[in-house]
Each structure stands twice: as structure tokens, then as C-alpha cells.
Amino acid sequence: MVYRHMPAMLDEVLAHLNCRPGLTYVDGTLGGSGHAAAICNQITPGGIFIGIDRDLDAVNYAKTKLQHFDLKIYLRHGCFSDLPEYLTQLDITAVDGILLDLGLSQHQLEASGRGFSFKNEEPLDMRMDIRESLTAEQLVNNLAQEDLQKLFKDFGEERWAKQIARGIAKIRQKEKISTSKRLAQIVANSVPRQARFKQKIHPATRVFMALRIAVNRELERLETFMNCVVDDLTPGGRLCVLSFHSLEDRIVKQRLKALEKGCQCPPHLPRCVCAKQAQIRILTKKVVRPTDREIATNPMSRSTRLRAAEKL
Image 1: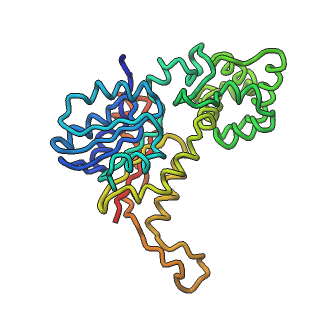
Image 2: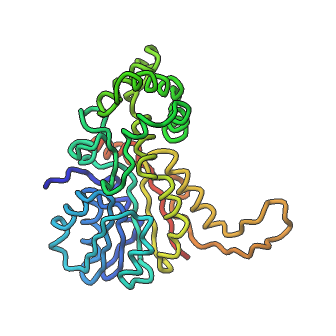
């Protein structure tokens, strides 16, 4: 199997992770193993690599892609939010670096057959892990119109959420909406004509993002991960997160700021009473974006936002 995907901001990721031979690193989102292979190359010999992905295609591809490295390599089909459990299973107390790349892969968009892209005629699925039960088709056909509107607004930041939800509710009274291309058509027809021509992106882009986030509980799982990630790192260990929209980036940014600040007392208190200490040092005081050169060679990287931190 060929798993097409070009890793975003590879040089920046490696620089912030500070990979060295013999250390232990985690890639919580294997994708096409581009980041993973580069990390493995830098921690050889003697290192330990742990790779995780919710997409079984990615895990299976990693088995082939990484097999020639002289390392202990452990691959898990699951979610990065379960990293503490995986480390316990491996009898590893903490690791020297963790990477999350929260974007979709080219494979998922072009060849997974699960309706991630509005360009293809595919089942309206959108599950990263097909062992889970909830699909985008179920949400589109069963959620109340008001709940669809809220979903598109909250998770997609969609300006025309009300009109789109109304359009979907109207069509599904006549037919079941079961393919990605049909949904994209309904969304496009629901957006005012003048607005469609002004948009730089396809009218269905934000709706598809919102459905994918909801189906896979992406924000919830990212919050779970960020709440315990410091415990999974050794002192001096690095965290690097690549996010692709403001909702993800906000969660990462706010959690890192809280971990660096330490004290959580209200501003009006004259002195700290919570006794919480700073746990990390933020390495990226401003979010890092891809260079124009990278965007030219890898257009999928254009919305990437990199944040990194080091455990104290």
C-alpha cells in the first residue's frame, strides 16, 4: 500500500524536538510516517520510537516504512490521548519528545474512501478509526436542524451555518444524504450565491471540518492529551504540536500558557495561594508558520501552526 502524504514543517519539527541518538520519542499521529522516519533516523542507534495513529492504514504503512531502523519501535492503533496507557503497557515512565500533527493526510483525503473530501463521491463516513460507531452520515441525517447549525458554527466557524442547516434539513425530508459529494452540493446551494463567488475556499470546507471534528471528538481528545502531557515527558523533554485551524491552536496555546505561568490564582489576590509552579518553558513565543517556499512545494501545509515547549 502507498500512503501518500508530505510531512509539514519537517525541519522546524526536528529542530524543536531536539532528537538525539538513544532517546525515546513519540509520534502521536503517524500519517504517512514522514515525521516518524526523520525522527527514527535521528535517534538511531539505541533509541525507542512509539508511533500512534487512529487510522489503521497509517499504522500498517508505518510497519513497512520504519522496519529498517535499528531501534525498538512500538506501533499502536489508537489515539494519542491514550498515551499514558500505552507507556504503562511498555513500562516506560516518560519520554524525551512528543509530536502531534493534527492535520488530515493526503491519503485520507484522496484514497481512504471515507468521505473526508467534498471532491469525491464517497460514503459520508469521516471516521479516522473505523472501529468507532458514529459517522458523519448519522449526524447529517439525524441531528435536529438547530443542533446542526450549532455544530457548523462552533466547530466550523461557519458564517452561513443557519442557512446550511436549513438546506440540509429540507433535503433530508426527501432523501437520505449519504455521500460526500451530495452533501457538498447541498451546502454550496445553501450559501448565498454572491457569497459563494467571494469565498476563496469551497463553500463546504468548514462544514466538512466541523463534521470530522465531531465524529472523531478531536477537540475533546486534544484537551485530554494536553491536560496530562507534562507527566509523560522527562525533564528537558520537548512537545511539538502542528495544528491546522484556530480551534485546535487555541487549546494548545492556552494550555501551554497555563503550564508556563504556574500560578492559577485570580488576579485580584495579593499573593499566590495555589502554590502551583511553572512546569514548562514555551519555545515558540509566537506561533511558527511554514515558509513561502514550503507552501509552494506542499500547498497542504499553508495553514500549519507550530507550537513547542520544553518541560522544566
